[in-house]
Length: 177
Length: 450
Image (cartoon, rainbow over all chains, first blue to last red; front, side, top):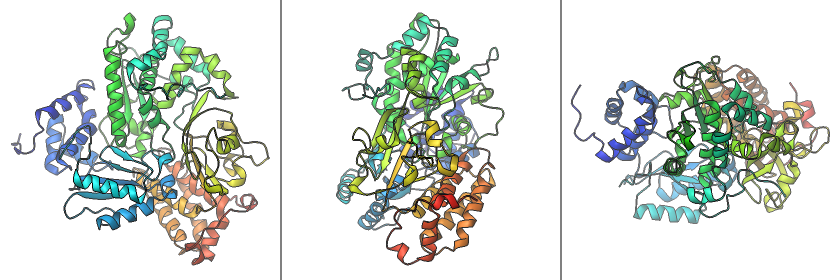
């Protein structure tokens, strides 16, 4: 086995979490823990670089390609760097008719970026995403694991100010800064 | 007064915690099933209840359970489908967030009925905070002896875990869910073999929606016959409806199946009518993939009878003049909404969510999206409308999984009922960019069968 890059290593607390995830499945079925471990890796490192994916493959005793094909299939995984706080605005059906497009344009204006881009300071990434299951509380966005619903321009201003001051978007129950 | 079976206690403070849930009668169904019933008797009660899958397909749950293969020495699994992603649907999130123990209780009784000793709740990755609520509740259930070895001294063992998805609508399809739970891309499998024979790790597997599993709790507590008394005909029991769009009171409502659509849409007990005193234009009654109904077919069927919130009544008239109860994602559109834009929005969704295995879906959804976008921008031709009809008809029924149908139906229904609005977009390319068409005339659907 080739040598691990020293900086690509989960802290013990996360290694324990990986072990807990693997233990949820029968022996030999540890690949079933892959999606959760990728979430942990992304929460810890911010995005899934190929080094990180190779590390996850070693952890789960599977081939790197098995990790790449999963990481590129699911929309929540980022394989390129993103901002510390991802603002993911739902744009589907009910959110659209309640004004999701206006919210997206407003955030674009406030942050000076286009949908899909990251602010130059690396703080915010703006993404339009598909239905997040909050249709009755539209328009809405998700930041980390937090749902922000019934959005207005004022609420968006407050959110941006809050995350600017404290760019912590909880994800997988982890607080990373 | 409407009976509530699932959300009866959702207003009680602290109901999310084990102690409060237990004090309010929680886990009684586990005691009853494990101490006084055989697994087959539990299946029998569910059959008697007439419960049908609440995820969208409406397949009878007891029958699904009875298909489970039971070869000697091969473990079986129960998987809960908590990958709620159908646009317009947010009921499972509400249930899991408010009363996580109800789902866990249902999982224990259902797993016991199926002889499963290791069960999983597969939850969409975006519901990560709900996953944490569930894991905490599962810990409490273990600590109080409802999970683990020899539950209540019955000799029955059960381990229950939660597994996250990572953003893929397709994983709500049961074989894609199984693939995902095996740590793979969510590509649906060819059937047969069905999951009941070869599912998770090629073992016999049942996949049920969150609400379906939760409904097993009142069925066991009160008996299948009692459950079947609620509702109309083959639509028994209660159903969670996610109401959204241009209504006064969006939210999750538990209804007795059989309440009229008019009552659901206009009474203060439920949606409270259209917002800002506007007129109703259209309604998608069961999540984005079911056919949209124009205003004059929402509360009445084509024959003039009252439309009811049941599997049968919403489907009355077939796809010509009816729709489906689906997942209960009830989306309401007022007169200011544009059906071309909305259809484009849904087409974009299905294109984004196509797994890409089958060419009719992979290529067709993208094609429909582009054609619809042109029409929406006033750059379309009349032939585009026929082209759309042609594409959707070639996707439907020609794919491994139902995502193809789910992408085709909304387009077909929009053209069937709103063709004049589509034509107006072609004929009024400038005007259609500044205002909306309004209501379609009542006759339009009769001429629009191809």
